[in-house]
Length: 511
Image 1 (cartoon, rainbow, N blue to C red):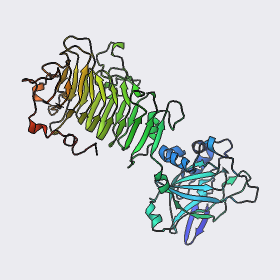
Image 2: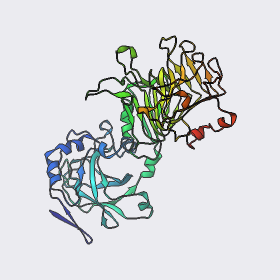
Image 3: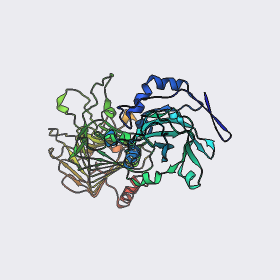
Image 4: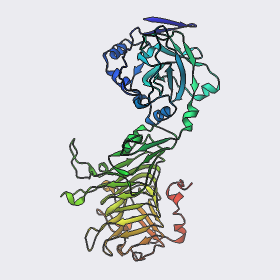
């Protein structure tokens, strides 16, 4: 083991060098990923120093959004963007060019040339003279073809340290790394960290998706995966026109995602699973498992998109034909100028708060359902014709818990259909697994109701009476509007409580 002294500090480092020849390696990702699998790396890991530094791929260490920004600043680069670096003759020591704090406890150490063999333990870090422990590292190149090593600190770093003028520096403690001419690092070479997080934050949080490969990603899920977990700022994912047949999931730990399509009719996210479809691992998908898109993240926004479940009900002879386009469960989720296409169970809003504005939703049986508190403002709700002369389906199937004062509010919307007159119900009460506390709440207010709406308005479900649910209307109009003993109307005083902000638990999506 080698010993390096700095002041009164003694650092014990492994004498085993992580060596990887870089000829023909692909910058940014491939070297580190291949190094993890190499025998030399495994040997160095086994003979690790007091602080073991694990070498991983850059894509494992840095989110895709953060890496994109680093590329824009020239700190990292794709292989095609990399210039041929300067080659120094023998006798010229390798020096540190710059050391940047890039946020998320990450430090980028850039050398003045390309290294052909690298030991990430050659560099150590100090904070006011105290050792700054490092746990992981990844290797890349910048646009000038120079080697960059990204280090992740075990100890938190933040911009306040730089404001307070704390001394944070990188120092060369070993010289195992070499360039193409065999030049080694210059021992004791050191450089103070520079905080560039402000520059990175000034770059818009934008990721792009296209089918032609000219954007950041070719799949919607790929872009979502690139968003850092637990982000605190809006990240826009712009999706060019195209049909993206994939399963998409926005996890709970990725809030503030804004999916924006090029236009609502041309940007389509689709899949074709359905409840009764057999899964490869056994069993069937079930209703929840059939969704094309799952949205769990809070403060989510979608605009100019089509969400589709393209399952053809006539293609198979099965009983369970539920096929969800979107499963939404989170708070403050907004959908603007978007389309939801399916048949049975198109839109499943199953917890939290959602706001739909100027959007189109189509289906036939229970195609807007769940237990969320949700507002549909200026939306077009289209009931498909199932070919029946008596029953062409149900618009809603709310399962609002009795503890929630509000469920679905349809405001200034239009209910349209190509089905026969008087053959579609406004809704029925859904009690999942017979839950007696699921007392559905649905209000249609100031909305146009087409001739397809049946005079009774509501109907029973699975032995539960619609008369026990919280189904109401207020000042609707059109040939499907009616006032009778089956269709309860809100009083003017009651109607004043059904505001967007009240239904959405204090959230005003228009602010």
